[in-house]
Length: 190
Image 1: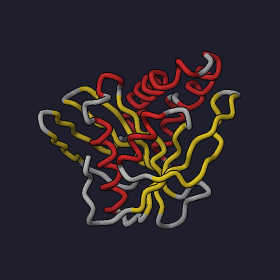
Image 2: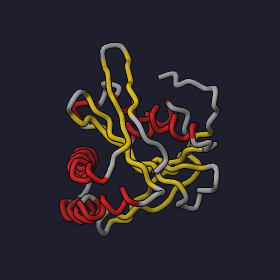
Image 3: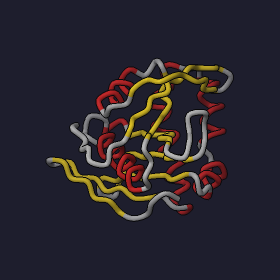
Image 4: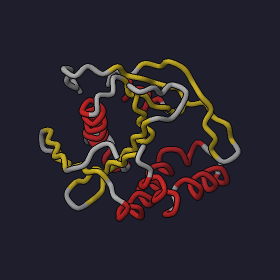
């Protein structure tokens, strides 16, 4: 696990709290994972491919396995008692990864929190964790047909450096690889 503890975010009237998820949060992560992935991608993919991916990726056994992996850290973002979003960080995987790189494997906010700075709070938490653990680069994969997410990442200073395949059911899609070099003294300007 990369980090533990509770982090309070405050930005104007929007206030969120984030924390590292534990094994006890597996069912919450399954629910929010299925919901946010479906809300984001269902309209652009077949029902069969969505069902296949969701069942494989977001089931309690799989999520517990990921939570138990010391290379992975899940962050839950809350607005009071409601989970507003989540992120998953992973170290030591992928062609781009070396000692100084950390992957943001997932970063999703519930539909009703898009545009309400939940994504900003999640990204800031991910970058803060990466810096605190002395990573010099953060990278992620984003579907080439997701302009909202690509724009969000670009505003945070991520640059496209390549692409790799992403399998959704039986559909081989293309994810852009984006990365951001970290500077300990930079502040998010969003």
